[in-house]
Image (cartoon, rainbow, N blue to C red):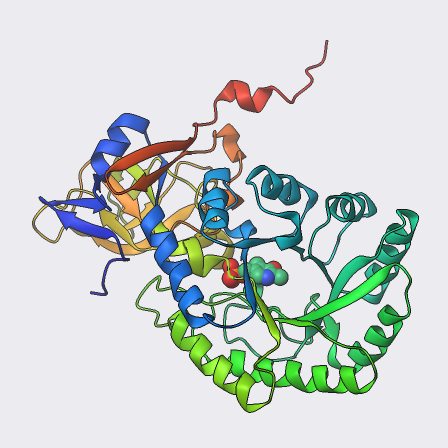
Length: 421
Ligand SMILES: *Cc1c(COP(=O)(O)O)cnc(C)c1O
């Protein structure tokens, strides 16, 4: 049995996150409920900060992993900038109090309106993903009498060895500019009156559990930097993206500080040790800081399968349905004995609505389960499918508990709709 994530412990026969019993939180706030540990987030961030200590760097949390305001505030106050992918995320980022010049804007489909707003507030960098986007950004910036800071996302064509849906650094996907076109694109950008080249970036995928793909990508990016600068365009910063994996089910990704020790050794060896470094970690800062609490509604043993029907569903925890992802599921108050093997499923009317398959659990109706590693790409991907309100969220800090998002009501959902007369 692999270890529980940090700050999740059994005390007096029940699961606690930091100093707080999860059963108490379920009683007070209902289920499904997301619970996050402030200490766990800060410990994950500290590993990156240790790894990059003494270097000119900026850690921009990729907020699509979990964009709840209190989470953003926690990481921004601890020193993070933010990586955004939409105008909505830009407004959330500003609401969280981040300095605009510590925001970088990623994504393949930025609209003119999004570019305009981001230029007006003074973000630090646009990570541009195509020649067409570069030209539109130039035009928008000139219309505002400004120069937009840009970095070009290059596609280093390395295999991140992860799930195809979250692999982004190979030729066959929509991200970045192909290696062969990079130098010409930089030359073009350098000649645009509305653009200021400030860097280069790559992001090769997500849930990466080995250092190898990062080292390969770094080599390719450094080759490009050398060639671009030889062509007369200086590259002030290098952004290596995010993507470091977490332990969902015995996965063994390198620790962020160990990974960066290796990467910095490579940078130093190649003479780039003084260059400003940017990174965009998402999952690895928040994924294992959160759990989702759910109550067992019904036991439905069957001839072929035994189903455990719980009150959380694919609208709360979309990763299993989307990527066949694995989340550990633990009883909040374990019973003795082995129990049976269950498929843990939600109430949504889809066979894809499962949370875990073939799990040995000894539970009864009314018991609480904790779905682990639920801090990243769960709440931020939650939906209202089946007119289910999105879950509430609480943040734990030692023995303190703060409600950071109220449970969404049906009235909240109906508010935007316009019924026929
Ligand atoms: C999603 C994303 C990230 C963060 O990825 P993680 O796997 O959560 O670390 C960073 N940069 C870009 C461009 C992304 O799209």
